[in-house]
Length: 47
Image 1 (tube, rainbow, N blue to C red):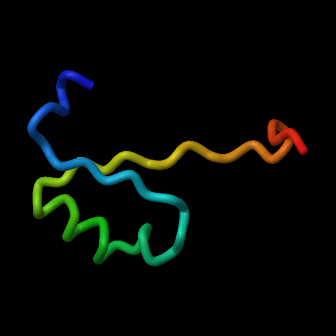
Image 2 (cartoon, one colour):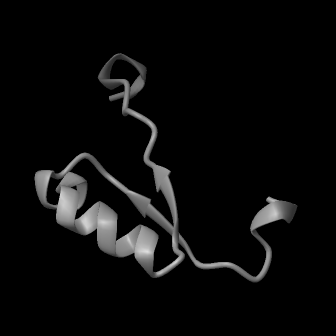
């Protein structure tokens, strides 16, 4: 995480609006680092 110190980070989920080309373009143009959210393994959830 040291390389991200002092920078804007955004963690996104897989919602279509967050993955849209316009959204990705704007985020990158603003210099924000795009970090995809890891997939959730439903088999790993303990009930």
